[in-house]
Image (tube, rainbow, N blue to C red; front, side, top):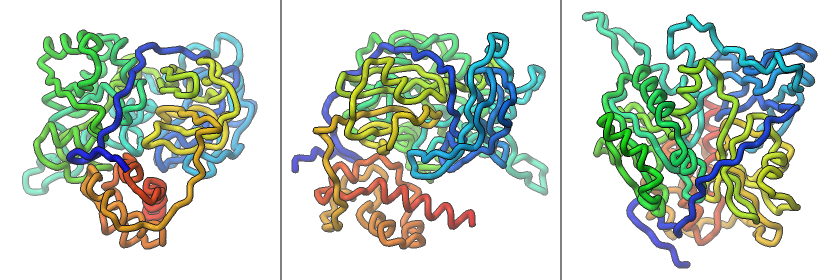
Length: 444
């Protein structure tokens, strides 16, 4: 096997980014999955026959920290029908059928006079762009509000964020949605989004994270804005995967290892978001609108496209908009390195999906999970300096406590271990299984 290693990852072949965005027409029948972010399922907040305006809340999680909004106004046709999510978990749906034109005006997700930015963010539907997408509110609530008070001095104790790093290209170098958005971004809207994040976090420095392999002309306008506003610019090589992982970006900025790679990287003083999240923050806090659209990469036999589609649109409709059709051998939600196989193109788009990758029938390889041969290649390549071979065996044989104690949750699910594994083991899938089982036992 010819594998090119570098410090903390592997070297991948070059890519051809896409800079055009295709808009997909909003559906007349939106199927809204109640599980739109990692580990959280909302409860339907509407009843069959109820009339809802565009942007109205149709689902809310029990903790009141995650919401699902309808992208179209109309009548609620179905509530509670169950589907199987890409994570293999059964979840419910709400179906809204388009109504008359007056229902298509935006219904604010909050009162206009509500001045609390964090509270408005809570109900907006903005999610993070990390390995396990969660509402941005969950990430920032301890940062933007006091966590505790020192009794002797009555001083508020906060988790501080000193730096905000904005990723301008994708974690997975095979994807192009962020490249296209960066090339076409409205600079005023982008700046507004940054300003809102600074208000929420009190960050002192903004960093733009570029791809060295993208022509400078595509970043020219953003670089000028950065220069005018005293933002810093740092560039990574996307071929050195996973250079754009949150933890590695954080290390480059602060010069030391973040304390926890996956869940609380902001504890190190760095908040890593992508350009799409910044624009969503602007939509939520400046325009007072919930997030009902997503820009994703679609890759199939006809090539790679970037599309902007409405949440709740069936994948089949998205593929038809870019001319993809046929009987595919495999549907992957996400990119080749981090995606998960899915079973149906009738499933609707959700906020946590970043790409659709289609594999032709003749290119599908039937996989058999073999035993670990203890070669150590995965440990050599792991960007988080873990022992994926050991961790995957703990997860394979149900040794959940041992997996948790071996830093399972520091795994960023980049897929590097599976990429270099000569035994062809399903490393990422085993890690995800382990995280699911450990989390369920913690919450039991």
